[in-house]
Structures are given as structure tokens and as C-alpha cells.
Length: 63
Image 1 (cartoon, one colour):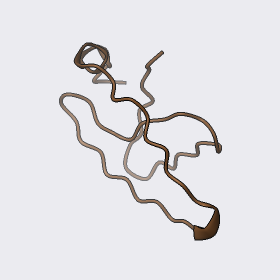
Image 2 (image 1 turned 90 degrees about the vertical axis):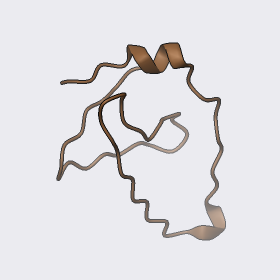
Image 3 (image 1 turned 120 degrees about the horizontal axis):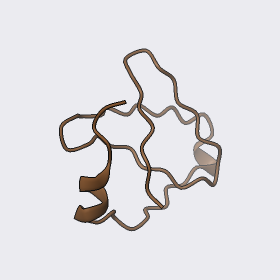
Image 4 (image 1 turned 30 degrees about the vertical axis):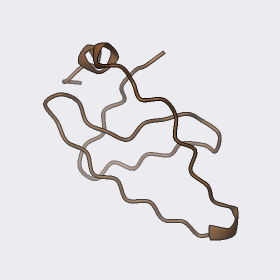
């Protein structure tokens, strides 16, 4: 399942550990991501499969 959550300048997002999520824009928007890691010994990145072009094109572009 793929769905979009819209954020606007000044919004703060929280994603609990272990929840699959994607950082990105839509076809007509961009996205900048800043991450702060306070415990580098316990951090790790697990890259998941890319979403398909079909899934990407179905994402809404407006809230």
C-alpha cells in the first residue's frame, strides 16, 4: 500500500522506528529531508524496494 501525507513549510513529521516510509516529493513537488541521529552506534538504514512508476504517478499532488 502506498499513500501520501502532505507536509508544508514548518511542519514536523515523526515516524516511529520500524515503520516503512519514503522521503520524497510527487511528480510536481520537491522534498528536502534533514535527519538528526543522536545514537550512531544503534542507527541503520534499510533501503526498501523502489515504488513503481505506476504507484508514483498515482500519488496525489494536492492536499
